[in-house]
Image: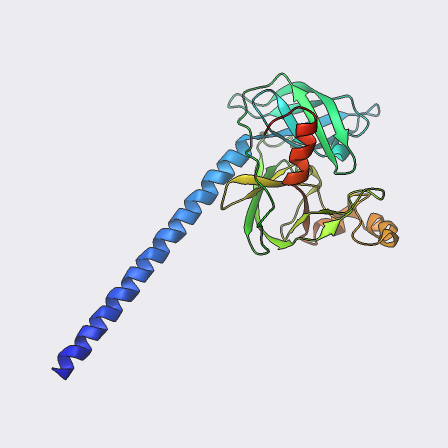
Length: 260
């Protein structure tokens, strides 16, 4: 009887570990499918923002649809000094360029609102940074390469994790606001890219390129000169990304009559 009892316990253990393994496998597949689904939705909501100055030099960034009425959100520094820019939208037949008006801008949180006669893109759903924890997985979509002559216009999706939740000044005279720091490499063209919480599929922030963007200082104005002196190509290799919080962005949009 003792031998039978020991054999029964071993069978129960085997059954337990097999069930646990199957459960973990299902969770892994579910998480992977969810990440893919969020990435597809993220990519479908973003457009390339670009313009040429009088010297013929092109500048570019990313914007994303915030409603179905032709409103897009991007960083203020991407469209600084402009009343109108172009947005490029990928289609199966090639990219389509549409004029977009800069209708509002707030340098304190580095946000700008665009309006265009393009109402077909799915709007990104806004969430909140409340309850966000260090270590959570995030993803973002944008156009780090801008226009590439050797390839079709296609948004790029990146993954990372929340690495810190400090308070920063977006400009020297602005109050410190909570921001989301991620461990993913962020390129210049990513400015204006939506940052999604993978678990919810909602926007929790908007990428502000990286810490080399002029005007972004941490806790002391004395480091401003130092931050601005860092070559952007070196900062880009540091693997640090900064996102402006969704809560501040939503308030900015609501002040200008855009409901999210």
